Image: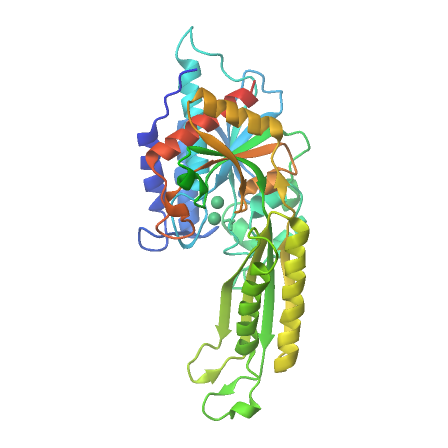
Length: 419
Ligand code: GLV
Ligand code: MN
Ligand code: MN
């Protein structure tokens, strides 16, 4: 099959989408259900409709855009990713899977529409999914949309999730125009026959090996933990050192402990990060009263990740006790790793061969909506290289040629799966 990806158009759309941002370029920031996110969604829905796709959304704002197959009674084949962007990040994370997914569908539309000698249109419908809040920025939970789709987050618990300003998800999503019961979001078993997600690697391995494509065989297990230390605070001049109970000192010891626990797990596949450290009242002449840490721990081995989490929790309590500061420890999430479906991985590898592109099998160290889609249907992911492995920062970059290759492999994979 001869496929002509319109990479110039897709690149222009990626550039346009990056302009929907709350920070100056080249950085991007699009937080779920902000004005900026809603404006970006309106732009994307316009593109989906222009491509003749049937668009709907659910109560948490997941958007579905369907290209009807010749037998719409069959379970669908799906692709997609997210378009929310963490603070001061780049323009390719997630967006390549949404706009690249759209271009894969448009490429197949052109190829199958061309004339009597062209290949037949797919039997199964192909659906592009744009997931709500893959990033944990606003409500602390990553993969909010796909968690609800897969039934992994009870609707009542989801409704009560609260952002830093005290607004709960239920109010925020309804104000954004996404109404109806959250309980209706969960997908019925068998709805999708397969899900394949295109994404930048967010690591350096493909670029170092000079390969076009990664066929993802497994996704690492992510977990997040919130620790809060509180103390009496006080005047930075008036309170003598011997009389202090400073919660920031417990938090500082814990930050070092997170690093040590990950490094000492016995495997380089364990990673631990303190990505949030909030200090109140944040005044140079005031001893901190309230310190909050959010800690991210991941591994491709679930039990090893859990042992590291246990060590961090135990030390978090110990440091609070030693410094005499009340401590609360809350698990936000601890998700299991996911395995790709061998048949979809094989379809990706066949697509690479058909497109004359090089590839390797690999694991995903970042998490993705595919982690939760794996609980609903067979999944796999297609990775493309990104410069120096950089992601979650403004310097994130994938070349148009790398994106074109990813879209071609995605299109070929979807076509195989939809037959
Ligand atoms: C997703 O953005 C992740 O943190 O892996
Ligand atoms: Mn991300
Ligand atoms: Mn992503």
